[in-house]
Amino acid sequence: MKYKELLFFHIIIFICFCFIVMFMHIIFFLYKQFGIIGLKEKDFKISPIFNDLCKNIHFNNLDIYKDYYSNSSIKNIFDPSISSSINDIYQKIVKERWFKMINKPLNLDNPVTFNEKIQWLKLYNSIPIKTRLADKYLVREYVKNKIGKEYLIPLLGVYDKFEEINFGMLPDKFVIKCNHGSGYNIIVKDKSKLNLKDIQTKINNWMNINYPFVYGMELHYRDIEPKIIIEEFMDDGTGDLKDYKITCFNGKPELIWVDSDRFTNHKRNLYDLNWKQLPYKINSHYETFPSPEKPKNLKKLLKFASILSKNFIYVRVDFYIINQKIFFSEMTFASESGYGNIEPHNFDLYLGSLIKLPKLAYNIDIGEYYFLKNPFKTKLYLIYPNIMVVFSLIIWVIHYIYKKLKFSLR
Image 1 (cartoon, one colour):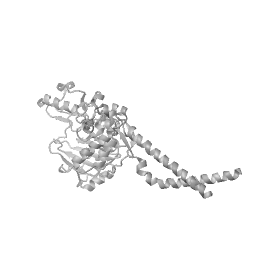
Image 2: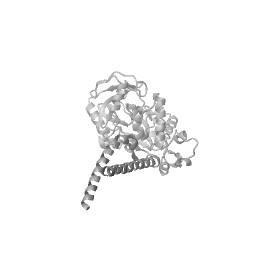
Image 3: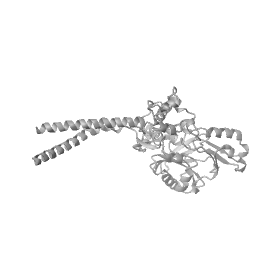
Image 4: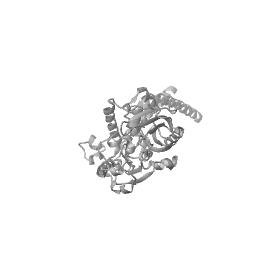
């Protein structure tokens, strides 16, 4: 009788356990379809993906909705049967572009190379602080607080519209930038030769572009409010202002790029932290050039990069050096947008090993973190035997106590 009772307890506990597991699966499925992982109707409504649902946000040369739901209307997107979240759509776009650029499928479930992990970070780690620091205007406040305003390029003006710029008040040389993307620069070396109409057309086009949707889906650029900034023209006297790019992982500098002739015949050298030139390439299209002398203030440069990159999984911090003085350039969270052909492949793997991906993904549309994978689906089979052992021990204890109580009550 004793063993029959024990067997009965085991069966009851096992059935309860199965019901609990099934219930957890159902809850997770509903959560995925209608909760944070799959956006609710209200989350679609607040998303700035759709022009007619938001104001004062410049979008969109890529109609994401029509790309994937071309036969649906905006109203139909609130139908619960449409289970893909906006993040799912982003993922489809990233995978398609990756295949087009790299000519092989993108592994987002287990990324190992530097470029694969950059794609993961673009999709699942475009956190608000990155948006602020990718903004070429707002980042100035961060740099000022971290290392000092004396390392900022002097700002001549910031504008919401081209028509606000008074060119008569500007010096003969300056640089015009838009703050919300990459490559939106106009270097002016002689103001008298400016064709203002052409510049206005170019800048107005830039101002109406939401940068991630026209190139690499770098989502941390998505919500930057576009502005025009004009900075002082910087010249180191050589006619070629070199760009010192410090690659950092979790606040630790690991690699230095030096870019030369960026607007004519772009070249790039790679160095270790001791200024030893490396035989590797990040973007093999760029040739190397005769190595410049080791900067006298290299230690200071690396220190600043470490300060500015603290607490970031990956970021590249760029500087200029003019007459031995350091000037901050920008912070880049997706170098080459994760498409640079890195050579050799082992170097790509090594850089990838330095990126430690977080356990939680970030949903940029509703501003919350979530688990990217179903932990029950992926790990239940690993923990099941241990759970059953624990349950068995609990059953033995319950049975023992039950028998003792039953005996004492007689």
